[in-house]
Image (cartoon, rainbow, N blue to C red; front, side, top):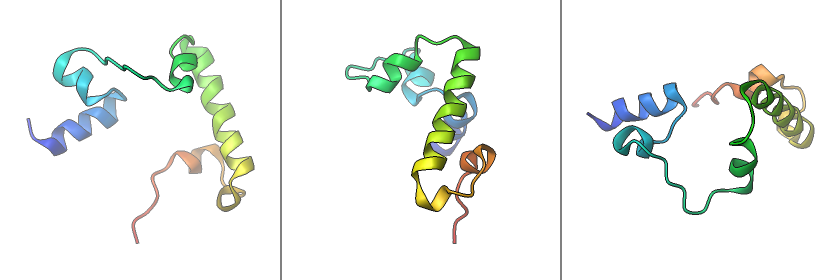
Length: 78
């Protein structure tokens, strides 16, 4: 498997490369956010995502006019 293909899979499946390559995602030092989010149901995860996007919108000057959908888009390369 090539690196670009692995990167595409990681992005499409929203998993780590370790998970794809080794079947597990051992995090020895997970972030506090990861610990909180990993215990949520899919519906709760959707709500958390929306809240986080609104938080970013409200606290980031360059994103003040952005919608949650716009915040999720990858920045265009100049």
